[in-house]
Amino acid sequence: MHRGSRLASVLRRTIAKTMPEHKPNATERADLSGQVVLITGGARRIGACLAETLHAAGMQVILHYRSSATLAHALQEKLNSQRENSCLLMQCDLAQTGKLKPMVDECVKQAGRLDVLVNNASAFYPTPIGKTETSQWDTLLDVNLKAPYFLSQAAAPHLRKSGGCIVNLVDIYADRPLRDHAVYSASKAGLLSLTRSFAQQLAPEVRVNGISPGAILWPENDHDEIGQQRLLSRVPLKRTGDPEDIARTALFLIRSAPYITGHVIPVDGGRSVLP
Image (cartoon, rainbow, N blue to C red; front, side, top):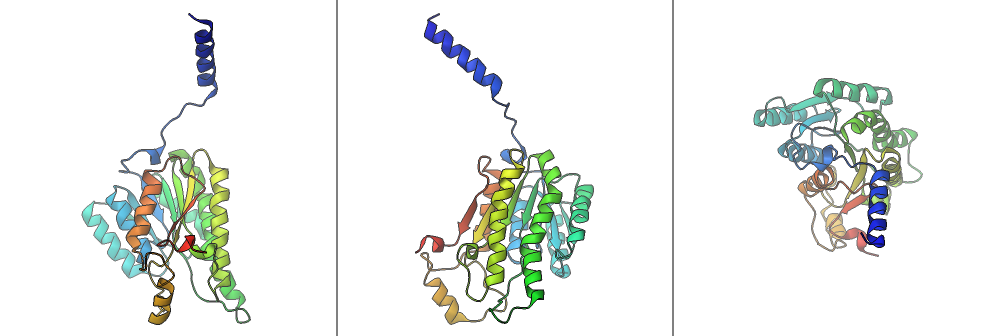
């Protein structure tokens, strides 16, 4: 054998010994059947769409809700009619931090495992400077930042075991604060930073990514059509998105992105690329 060939062979064997063996984790398998996802705020709006999309991909779904009991039970009945015993419900006020780990533990007890955590639940309302109450600060930070932190902390051992992932619903206002919504914007900026921090801390077993929605669904109390059209005029695609746009992105991150972690994908019709 030529000396150069022998040297190359030795190098290949040496590299092979020092490189850790790659074992495909749960989210690298295209088939999500039997995997379990916990979705906070999963009974309505974007959360319900996430639940239906991930359920259709074969996942067992655990729907968390706070007060939307009627909608949660209706969605559970719908999903269980499609696939028996494929949807569980968990009621919890996410602002009560002490209840978060017990909720995750109960999820694992009932479902047998946990593969994906989707931190979707969110509180949203204006807090104009000079008129903000400490209770508003507490609610926005507790639901939008503190709860995802402690839910992720509680879920981490189970996600490490399954080789799972976390998907956080951030917001384009994490980068460009919305006027009169300073506290909300700050809470989502914190969630963006948390996504990147947990991606470092939980690697290599657990991937952590985020999605930043733009104009997908208008707030339920927003009836300002002129303001809505003014906002859409600044969106390159000139229209709102659909909850399905968020759900498909989440499915991609869960099922088809084994080498992506620590990133937040804007789903905003191009708004974030404008100066």
